Image 1 (tube, one colour):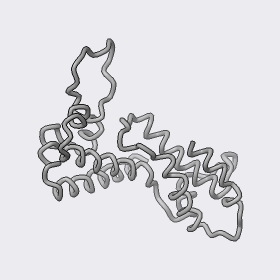
Image 2 (cartoon, rainbow, N blue to C red):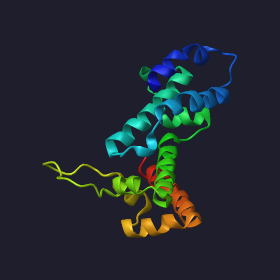
Image 3 (tube, one colour):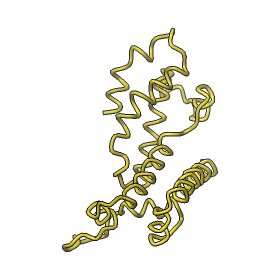
Image 4 (tube, one colour):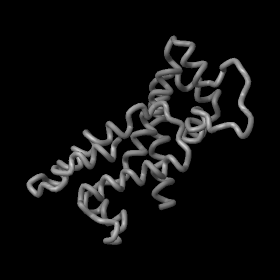
Length: 175
């Protein structure tokens, strides 16, 4: 749906009278909102993260009207637009913030769902990645520590910032 939105706004991307910085703001406002709708509830696997990064790159290339045949690197695109990868970072931040909100809320049903405390049998085969697996990986903490930290809002907010920064640092080291 986000790609369709990007294509629908083609006349904006083709307009030479609109500056790059304004186009970037329009992408973030009009396209990213469609892409990240409900992202707080997603369980992200490596494959999903790759797709999100690819989509972000596709948006930027489309904005600049750069064909894949031109063999321009991602770094060259980022340098031209004076931006960095930001979409996955914003999804992580939203998910971590939402998790803290749920843990502090009075609603026990939401907490039970997030913690996986539902009645019934588990299906056959390898267990799917759970919602909490992302939180544990990004914060580098176990579930017990995480639940106690969410009760202290300022401490949780600080941990969210650190987790997002650490994920960005590890991604830039790998890339």
